[in-house]
Image (cartoon, rainbow, N blue to C red; front, side):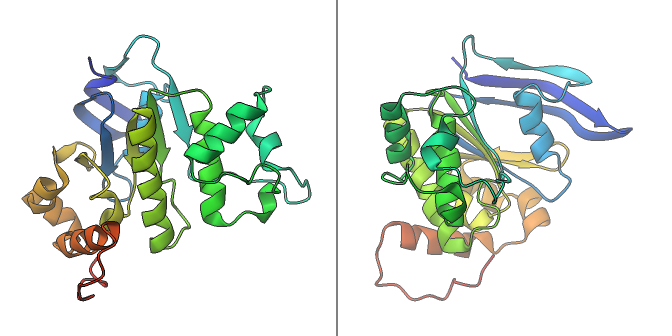
Length: 245
Protein backbone atom coordinates (compact mmCIF):
# COMPACT_ATOMS: atom_id res chain seq x y z
CA UNK A 1 0.00 0.00 0.00
CA UNK A 2 1.34 3.45 -0.94
CA UNK A 3 2.53 5.82 1.80
CA UNK A 4 1.15 8.79 -0.11
CA UNK A 5 -0.72 9.34 -3.35
CA UNK A 6 -1.01 12.67 -5.15
CA UNK A 7 -3.90 12.68 -7.62
CA UNK A 8 -4.44 15.42 -10.24
CA UNK A 9 -3.04 18.05 -7.89
CA UNK A 10 -3.45 21.65 -9.04
CA UNK A 11 -2.38 24.56 -6.84
CA UNK A 12 -2.79 28.25 -7.65
CA UNK A 13 -1.04 30.89 -5.55
CA UNK A 14 -1.62 34.60 -6.09
CA UNK A 15 -3.37 33.98 -9.40
CA UNK A 16 -0.52 31.84 -10.75
CA UNK A 17 -0.84 28.11 -11.38
CA UNK A 18 2.16 26.71 -9.48
CA UNK A 19 1.29 23.02 -9.90
CA UNK A 20 -0.88 21.67 -12.69
CA UNK A 21 -2.40 18.16 -12.71
CA UNK A 22 0.43 16.48 -10.79
CA UNK A 23 0.20 12.73 -10.13
CA UNK A 24 2.56 10.47 -8.22
CA UNK A 25 2.60 7.85 -5.49
CA UNK A 26 5.25 6.66 -3.08
CA UNK A 27 5.88 3.19 -1.69
CA UNK A 28 7.15 2.32 1.82
CA UNK A 29 10.94 2.41 2.07
CA UNK A 30 11.41 4.24 -1.23
CA UNK A 31 13.74 7.24 -1.65
CA UNK A 32 12.15 9.70 -4.07
CA UNK A 33 13.74 12.99 -5.05
CA UNK A 34 11.92 15.92 -6.65
CA UNK A 35 14.16 18.07 -8.84
CA UNK A 36 13.32 21.12 -10.91
CA UNK A 37 14.36 24.71 -11.59
CA UNK A 38 13.58 27.58 -9.22
CA UNK A 39 9.86 28.34 -9.18
CA UNK A 40 8.94 24.87 -10.45
CA UNK A 41 6.64 24.14 -7.48
CA UNK A 42 8.92 21.75 -5.53
CA UNK A 43 8.36 23.30 -2.09
CA UNK A 44 4.66 23.83 -2.86
CA UNK A 45 4.41 20.10 -3.53
CA UNK A 46 5.90 19.28 -0.12
CA UNK A 47 3.69 21.84 1.61
CA UNK A 48 0.63 20.30 -0.06
CA UNK A 49 1.64 16.85 1.21
CA UNK A 50 2.04 18.00 4.82
CA UNK A 51 -1.23 19.96 4.62
CA UNK A 52 0.19 23.50 4.74
CA UNK A 53 -1.20 24.34 1.28
CA UNK A 54 -4.74 23.53 0.17
CA UNK A 55 -5.07 22.34 -3.44
CA UNK A 56 -7.43 24.06 -5.84
CA UNK A 57 -8.08 20.75 -7.53
CA UNK A 58 -7.19 17.12 -6.91
CA UNK A 59 -6.14 15.61 -3.61
CA UNK A 60 -3.30 14.27 -1.52
CA UNK A 61 -3.99 10.90 0.10
CA UNK A 62 -1.92 9.76 3.11
CA UNK A 63 -1.95 6.22 4.45
CA UNK A 64 -3.97 5.92 7.68
CA UNK A 65 -1.84 6.72 10.71
CA UNK A 66 1.08 7.91 8.58
CA UNK A 67 3.80 9.54 10.72
CA UNK A 68 5.86 12.18 8.92
CA UNK A 69 9.25 13.53 10.00
CA UNK A 70 10.16 16.89 8.46
CA UNK A 71 13.68 18.29 8.00
CA UNK A 72 13.61 22.00 7.03
CA UNK A 73 16.19 23.90 4.95
CA UNK A 74 17.58 25.49 8.07
CA UNK A 75 16.53 26.88 11.42
CA UNK A 76 17.46 30.19 13.01
CA UNK A 77 18.86 29.72 16.50
CA UNK A 78 19.24 32.65 18.89
CA UNK A 79 23.01 32.87 19.30
CA UNK A 80 22.64 34.72 22.60
CA UNK A 81 20.90 31.68 24.09
CA UNK A 82 23.37 28.82 24.52
CA UNK A 83 21.11 25.77 24.22
CA UNK A 84 22.59 22.25 24.38
CA UNK A 85 21.57 19.77 21.69
CA UNK A 86 19.64 17.53 24.10
CA UNK A 87 17.46 20.45 25.23
CA UNK A 88 16.77 21.50 21.64
CA UNK A 89 15.79 17.91 20.84
CA UNK A 90 13.31 17.89 23.74
CA UNK A 91 11.39 20.98 22.55
CA UNK A 92 8.45 21.48 22.77
CA UNK A 93 7.68 18.29 24.71
CA UNK A 94 9.92 16.24 26.97
CA UNK A 95 11.58 13.24 25.34
CA UNK A 96 13.37 10.42 27.21
CA UNK A 97 17.13 11.00 27.11
CA UNK A 98 17.73 7.48 25.77
CA UNK A 99 15.48 8.19 22.79
CA UNK A 100 17.36 11.43 22.07
CA UNK A 101 20.72 9.62 22.19
CA UNK A 102 19.40 6.89 19.90
CA UNK A 103 18.10 9.39 17.31
CA UNK A 104 21.42 11.27 17.35
CA UNK A 105 23.26 8.00 16.81
CA UNK A 106 21.07 7.05 13.83
CA UNK A 107 21.60 10.54 12.37
CA UNK A 108 25.37 10.15 12.64
CA UNK A 109 26.04 12.62 15.46
CA UNK A 110 26.30 10.37 18.52
CA UNK A 111 27.98 12.07 21.46
CA UNK A 112 26.90 15.62 20.65
CA UNK A 113 23.98 15.87 23.08
CA UNK A 114 25.80 18.21 25.49
CA UNK A 115 27.29 20.41 22.77
CA UNK A 116 25.78 23.89 22.34
CA UNK A 117 23.66 24.24 19.18
CA UNK A 118 25.57 27.40 18.28
CA UNK A 119 28.89 25.48 18.31
CA UNK A 120 27.85 22.93 15.68
CA UNK A 121 29.20 22.90 12.14
CA UNK A 122 26.69 23.18 9.28
CA UNK A 123 26.73 19.43 8.69
CA UNK A 124 26.31 18.63 12.39
CA UNK A 125 23.44 21.12 12.66
CA UNK A 126 21.56 19.48 9.76
CA UNK A 127 22.10 16.05 11.29
CA UNK A 128 20.64 17.27 14.59
CA UNK A 129 17.58 18.51 12.64
CA UNK A 130 17.44 15.06 11.04
CA UNK A 131 17.68 13.38 14.45
CA UNK A 132 14.83 15.55 15.74
CA UNK A 133 12.68 14.48 12.76
CA UNK A 134 13.41 10.84 13.67
CA UNK A 135 12.11 11.15 17.25
CA UNK A 136 8.55 10.40 16.15
CA UNK A 137 9.54 7.12 14.40
CA UNK A 138 8.34 8.40 11.01
CA UNK A 139 7.09 6.19 8.21
CA UNK A 140 7.99 9.02 5.84
CA UNK A 141 10.88 11.46 6.11
CA UNK A 142 10.49 14.71 4.13
CA UNK A 143 13.53 16.91 3.44
CA UNK A 144 13.20 20.34 1.84
CA UNK A 145 16.59 21.41 0.44
CA UNK A 146 18.10 20.05 3.66
CA UNK A 147 21.71 20.55 2.54
CA UNK A 148 21.43 24.19 1.49
CA UNK A 149 24.60 25.92 2.66
CA UNK A 150 26.71 22.75 2.85
CA UNK A 151 29.59 22.23 0.43
CA UNK A 152 29.55 19.32 -2.02
CA UNK A 153 31.41 16.81 0.21
CA UNK A 154 29.14 17.82 3.13
CA UNK A 155 26.04 17.32 0.98
CA UNK A 156 27.25 13.94 -0.27
CA UNK A 157 27.97 12.81 3.29
CA UNK A 158 24.52 13.98 4.45
CA UNK A 159 22.73 12.06 1.68
CA UNK A 160 24.77 8.94 2.44
CA UNK A 161 23.49 9.32 6.01
CA UNK A 162 19.93 9.47 4.65
CA UNK A 163 20.50 6.21 2.77
CA UNK A 164 21.75 4.67 6.02
CA UNK A 165 18.69 5.95 7.93
CA UNK A 166 16.41 4.39 5.33
CA UNK A 167 18.30 1.09 5.61
CA UNK A 168 18.09 1.05 9.41
CA UNK A 169 14.54 2.33 9.92
CA UNK A 170 12.83 1.26 6.70
CA UNK A 171 11.15 4.64 6.31
CA UNK A 172 10.31 6.23 2.97
CA UNK A 173 12.22 9.40 2.09
CA UNK A 174 10.90 12.26 -0.03
CA UNK A 175 13.49 14.92 -0.83
CA UNK A 176 13.51 18.21 -2.70
CA UNK A 177 16.93 19.26 -3.88
CA UNK A 178 18.77 21.30 -6.49
CA UNK A 179 21.96 19.27 -6.04
CA UNK A 180 21.57 16.97 -8.98
CA UNK A 181 25.10 15.56 -8.77
CA UNK A 182 24.37 14.12 -5.33
CA UNK A 183 20.69 13.27 -5.13
CA UNK A 184 20.42 11.51 -8.47
CA UNK A 185 22.49 8.61 -7.20
CA UNK A 186 21.04 8.67 -3.67
CA UNK A 187 17.51 8.10 -5.04
CA UNK A 188 15.47 5.10 -6.11
CA UNK A 189 13.29 7.35 -8.23
CA UNK A 190 13.53 10.93 -9.47
CA UNK A 191 10.59 13.17 -10.34
CA UNK A 192 11.44 16.10 -12.59
CA UNK A 193 8.99 18.91 -11.87
CA UNK A 194 8.38 22.15 -13.73
CA UNK A 195 4.83 23.06 -12.71
CA UNK A 196 3.90 19.57 -13.93
CA UNK A 197 5.71 16.22 -13.95
CA UNK A 198 8.07 16.43 -16.93
CA UNK A 199 9.49 12.94 -16.44
CA UNK A 200 10.05 10.42 -13.67
CA UNK A 201 11.78 7.11 -13.15
CA UNK A 202 15.08 5.63 -12.06
CA UNK A 203 17.87 8.24 -11.95
CA UNK A 204 19.77 6.89 -14.96
CA UNK A 205 16.56 6.85 -17.04
CA UNK A 206 15.57 10.40 -16.05
CA UNK A 207 19.10 11.70 -16.73
CA UNK A 208 18.68 10.59 -20.36
CA UNK A 209 15.14 11.96 -20.79
CA UNK A 210 14.81 14.86 -23.28
CA UNK A 211 12.59 16.86 -20.87
CA UNK A 212 15.23 16.55 -18.14
CA UNK A 213 18.08 17.51 -20.46
CA UNK A 214 16.12 20.52 -21.70
CA UNK A 215 15.99 21.80 -18.10
CA UNK A 216 19.40 20.74 -16.77
CA UNK A 217 21.68 19.96 -19.70
CA UNK A 218 23.67 16.76 -20.01
CA UNK A 219 26.34 17.12 -17.32
CA UNK A 220 24.67 15.06 -14.62
CA UNK A 221 25.79 11.68 -15.95
CA UNK A 222 29.45 12.58 -15.42
CA UNK A 223 28.68 13.84 -11.94
CA UNK A 224 26.71 10.68 -11.26
CA UNK A 225 29.77 8.65 -12.19
CA UNK A 226 31.94 10.76 -9.87
CA UNK A 227 29.52 10.40 -6.96
CA UNK A 228 29.31 6.64 -7.44
CA UNK A 229 33.10 6.52 -7.53
CA UNK A 230 33.29 8.41 -4.21
CA UNK A 231 30.40 6.40 -2.84
CA UNK A 232 32.17 3.07 -3.33
CA UNK A 233 35.37 4.57 -1.89
CA UNK A 234 37.29 3.27 -4.90
CA UNK A 235 40.09 5.70 -5.66
CA UNK A 236 41.71 4.10 -8.67
CA UNK A 237 39.87 6.41 -11.06
CA UNK A 238 40.81 9.73 -12.59
CA UNK A 239 38.97 12.93 -11.73
CA UNK A 240 37.85 14.05 -15.17
CA UNK A 241 34.28 14.48 -14.00
CA UNK A 242 34.88 16.74 -11.03
CA UNK A 243 33.60 19.88 -12.70
CA UNK A 244 30.48 18.52 -14.38
CA UNK A 245 27.30 19.83 -12.86
